[in-house]
Image (cartoon, rainbow, N blue to C red; front, side, top):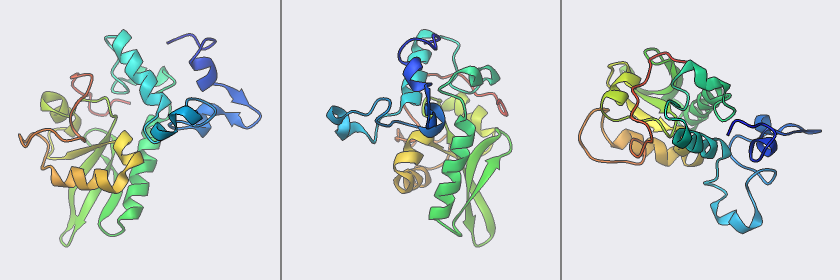
Length: 195
C-alpha cells in the first residue's frame, strides 16, 4: 500500500505525456481499472475508494481524510476539492433550490437548501467510508441538525442522492438505514475542521 514502485500505485500514480493519471482520473478509466470485461461495473469502479478501503483494513488508525495526516495518502489527495466541485455541480442542477457552500463547523463542502425565507438546512458532503451515525455523525455535524451525502453517490447519481438525503430526515433520527448514511468502515468521531 505504501510502495509507489509496485502495483497498484505504480500504475495509478503514473505520469505519461498526457500528464499525471491521478490528476486526470478521479474514479476509473481504461488506463487504470476499467476493462472490457468489467464494463458493466464501470460506473461503480473507483480506484481511490478501493485503495482507501484496503488501507482502512490494514491500518487501524486510518481515518480516510478525517485526520490532517491522511492527506499524504494518494487516494485522499484532492478529496476536499473534488467534493467541493461535486457540491457545486449538484447546486447547478437545482438552481435557486441549492447553494454550494462550506459547512462552518466541519469545514466540509455542503449544499444549503434554499426556501422562501432564505437558507434552509445543510446537506454535508462526506467521504463514503465515514460513519455518519451516532457520535461520529454528531461530531461531523458540529452539533448542528444536518443531513449527509457521500461523494460516491453524489458523483454517480447526484439527483437520486439528493432526493435520498432530503427524504431521510435529519441526522440523529432513528428512521432506519439509508444508502447515504450507513455501512461505514470506521466509527471514529470526526474532528471538526480537520484538514
